[in-house]
Image 1: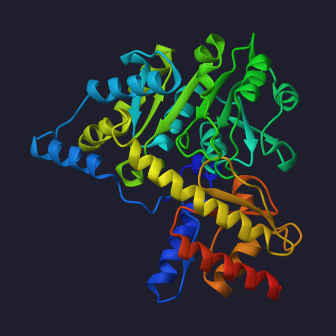
Image 2: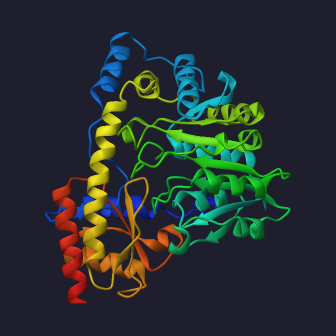
Amino acid sequence: MKIAQRMENLSPSVTMAITALGRELKAQGRDILSFSAGEPDFDTPEMIKNAAIKALNGGFTKYTAVEGITETKQAIINKLKRDHGLDYELNHIVISNGAKHSLFNLCQVLIEKGDEVIIPAPYWVTYPEQVKFSDGVPVIINTDEKTDFKITPDQLQAAITPKTKALILNTPSNPTGAVYTKEELEDIAKVLEGTDILVWSDEMYEKIIYDGKKFVSAASISEDMYQRTITINGLSKAVAMTGWRFGYIATPKTEIAKAMIKLQGQVTSNINSITQHAAIPALLGEVDADIEMMRVQFEKRRDYAVSAFNAIEGVSCFKPQGAFYLFVNIKDINPDSIRFAADLLEEKGVAVVPGLAFGMERYFRFSFATDLASIEEGIKRIREFIEKK
């Protein structure tokens, strides 16, 4: 049997592979500490679970509209208005099985063979893979710590060609935690004026912001940006709902939303009906106290972990403004991030994700979405591993 050629264009998720390996080693009795998965260690808030139970007991277990029920879509509309002053209508919203599914749908309905999609690096591992799977061409813009891992207007201008279809923005960023300011987004918007280039704005970590900074949604920058931006979001990270699989897009371009609904109708149909009801309290702001509690704990963990890594000789660590990852610089220890991560797992039982998975060697990603005691022990083992080297 021959596997379809298109699968040759798709690489497995390194983060998922390392997480699975860590679990396998742990099941074998190894003492494994995993900092590879982007999954909060907190439980889903009680109000959300109660909404799910109410839906179950009420018999809400049937098919729904492919794009989601009206009540949940309206809750998304209310959230975007409340948080960012953005106005959307019901036919502007499509709910999918997590933001990864939303992105896949976008690629499939918008990217044709040879279309270019600009992706700043380091990037979330899925972006270039989904673009390639859709016969598109990822155009990578490399950033560095001098610009806080954010692209400059000049870099963006230089990357644009007649084949450019979209720019993917991820703020706060996975894996760096970089957050674009309003002024930086305005500069990007100026470069895009007069073009047909779409902005796919992945805002999954918008609620996990530190140091009193304010998150700014790309679509809120101007009317021009509103019209060209497809906002991608969900509840996995900020509301600890990774397993519930809830993602959505918002776009004023109804033709895009209709195409996504058509595709999803032939692939998954609606997302889980119970999840749709459970999402409503989170979208309406009824669990904001839970979100803030988690954010405060993440900030404490970040502060400890950044300080601890920067105290290790030969290592430096960018201080993220959002999300729950550290992108740790090991160029003076071992620029081969895959070898570093493999040796670390074998020798010290610590799982991290090599920077190469995110398009940048000489780094590894360390998730601090776990308890402080594990973080302390994990960094201690990493320090011992590096000192031995």
